[in-house]
Image (cartoon, rainbow, N blue to C red; front, side, top):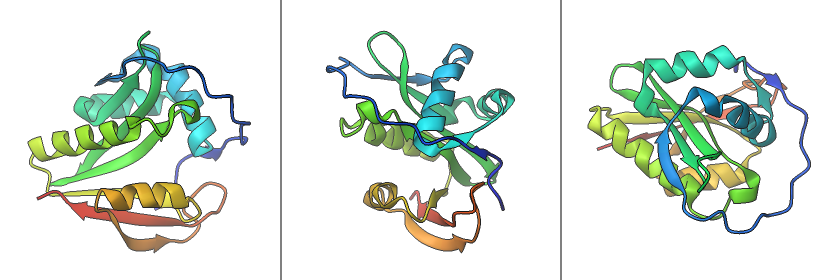
Length: 168
C-alpha cells in the first residue's frame, strides 16, 4: 500500500506563541480545511486534495477529531477511518508544532481510542515514517508496536512502519 500524497516543502518552525488557553476537542468542520491542510503540510510534509478530508469525514465523522484553541482555530487533529470490520486506522495525526508538548496529542489519541472502543473496534493501526523517532515513541506509550516494514511507503520514497495495538 502506498501513501496518496505529494511531499510538501519542509517549513521553518515558527516561534512558540503564548499559552493558547483552553483547548477543546470537537468534530471536523469544513471551515477547518485550510488550517488543517497547513498543519499537514508543515507536520506531515504531505499535500492532499481537499476532497479527501471531506469524504473521509463523512465516512466516520466521530473518527475525525479536531483540537481547537480558545478562538476555535484548529491546532491539531486526528483523522481515523474504519476500512476493515473491527479495526480503526489512524490515517493522519498531527499537532501544530507551536502547540506540541502540551498534552494535545495525548488528548486526541485518548479520545480516538475511546471512540473506537465505543464502536466495538478490536484493533487500531497506523503508519509512521521510520525516521520519525518522536512519533514512534509517542505511539509506543499508547501500546502500539511495529508489525511490518512498508518499503517506499511515503511519496518521497521513505519507508514506513505499520504499527498496531489491541483495543481490549
